[in-house]
Image 1 (tube, rainbow, N blue to C red):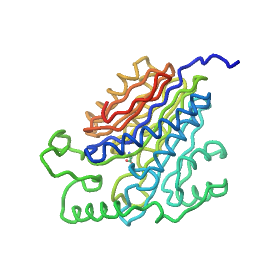
Image 2: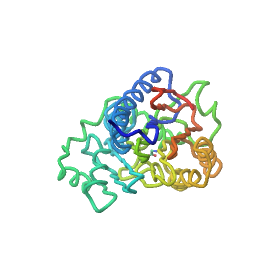
Image 3: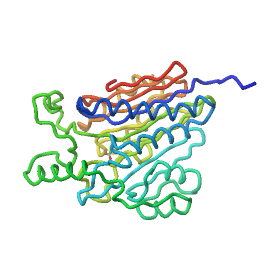
Image 4: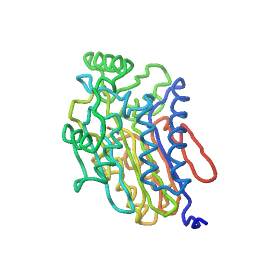
Length: 326
Ligand code: GLY
């Protein structure tokens, strides 16, 4: 006989918020669905929220559709540099890595940091050495680099050389009348931010969050964005909420937006409202753009974005649902 679940297992994932073009929509939804299926299996059999978010994000890192793991955007000198964080809201433990170049799944290295280290965060070669010393394979950076991304970097650098604005953050550059710059008159660009993330609530009532990214296209080597910084692109605390963000990292970091959103939930705001407020705050304060998924300890959730689309999915005992907008 099993114990009655006291909480409804819930998994919410995202695969980036940007102007997802029509020809990439199916791949985004399929990737999100695969992540949901893998992560929710763990929750359904009584596994932990932390295991579920790690597994879901691993699937997204392995999918070259997204700006995480293999297929990520390239640095200005043509390499993949990855950042990832996960957080266990029950134990209040976190693990993060940044600027790693030789790990296929940085979220798994982050989990090792969380479980196996008295520290919380490792960067660069030290992070890779730590992961290798705990059994992770070190790979050649070239294995993470796609020709698609080499071409995208070349195009971005050509635009930069031509003096076109916002190139640092440009991924998919749209030139037609339906360009996001036309549809959404924000000063910041609306190009690809395929950062991935997951938040989960398990049957024991524990929350967890995970976020992983290749960062921004044409970034200067060594640049770290919001995704792997605690309270910025990822946060979880059973006493407030679990959150993962995607979007233009610098404004999100300056606002410590993940913690801002979870604090509002702790203060009594419904996650659905807090998610919308967080994205409004991001834009109104710093003209930032991006997306958020937010899950409370009672299973209520919210998602919001101020980009043309966000790839997301939800799994509960009632089934799986995916979408490309909120
Ligand atoms: N949000 C991903 C980044 O800016 O690196």
